[in-house]
Image (cartoon, rainbow, N blue to C red; front, side, top):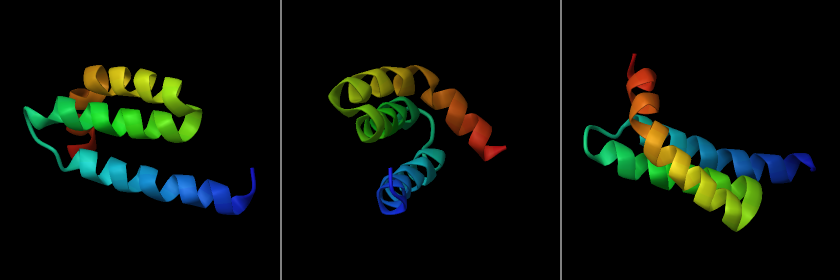
Length: 69
């Protein structure tokens, strides 16, 4: 993978991570699912989107709580 492709994948991922850290309470699961699906899609395509979305829904609230500390 060349450097340009890596940077093009990293920038949206950082934006999603920053957005996820800003979410609160009920929105955490939705935001976690969306962020996980987006990250999974960038890394592994459609299968990664499904897996990332599922993991994001489950782990999203704990990730956002940890990011705020």
